[in-house]
Length: 136
Length: 301
Picture 1 (cartoon, one colour):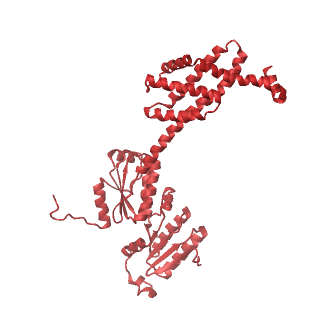
Picture 2 (tube, each protein chain N blue to C red):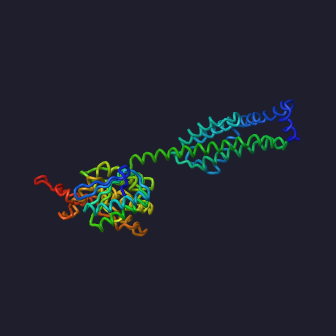
Picture 3 (cartoon, one colour):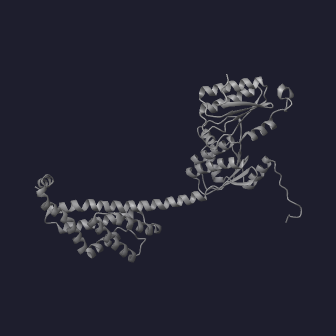
């Protein structure tokens, strides 16, 4: 099920998951990324997800739809999602093609995203994974 | 008979000289004729210009000088067949007369008038020999049309150059993105927003959000007289795109007219955060960023 480190990486930081997309993904890779991420949210009992798309200089309609879906699915599994690092060109292209990120929160970069999660995710001790409890 | 001899001249090298000599001589003859009757033809031309009410932005003296040099240039091009000198002259002339409000149609008009005046004089001179007249006109017309073309193109080129220059000037003056507090940008928009400027504005704003790590942007459009639907939609998109980059946009200074326009043309402004004036916008931005501004005691006047 792993998409491999060359395409995406999903790291755990406390009760958050940080997923970075390193290169443009095709539709099936995008789907695998989605499955992988949703799977891990449950496994690691994450409360927040940051998806970093700073490396992408294009994001097609399928990509942004999948990001919206991930946000929605993550919410159903109890995690808040933030998209970070959307490039200026990508942002404007997405808007002019009418494919925003819906109700998904977006932030400038990873730092901003983490700050948002810190402010908005309820600190629930039960949600923190056993191995990372000392971190939070 | 003429047609036959021309075909002959192409196939037989011997027959060339005589026939060609005569064809070659037509143009110098014509030029000599135009030089000889220069003052009379020029006067005639000047009358026609006046009758047509062209070039009234110029004084009679200037007219006399310009018509003289246009005439000489014209005849010279007929003689040499090279339009380069004329191009330079036409460009120079355009540079001088465009700022005085001379229209393209006037410039083209006077050149066409000159063409007609000269053609008339050729009719008159060769009226007894119709075949010869035809050949003279064959030589004259392409050259004359090329001249009219050259002048018109030079004039329009010059005009476009001026317009381009002004557009560049406007572009340089356009859309500064000003950081006024940490993470707060102000974007004053002054002057008419066309789609090109709107595009540029978006580009600079999004780049500015990234470099300054802005969280709030105050876009002040007090100085914009009007917006149309395209630009309004573009502004909405810019606000959305800024949100994707993690910055919220506050729009201030919507004039009554623009507010009416936006509502009338049905732009969806429900997601836009608008505040009456720049002061209010800055206060709201400071509130969003958690700044509190207080006046020191004693400094109040």
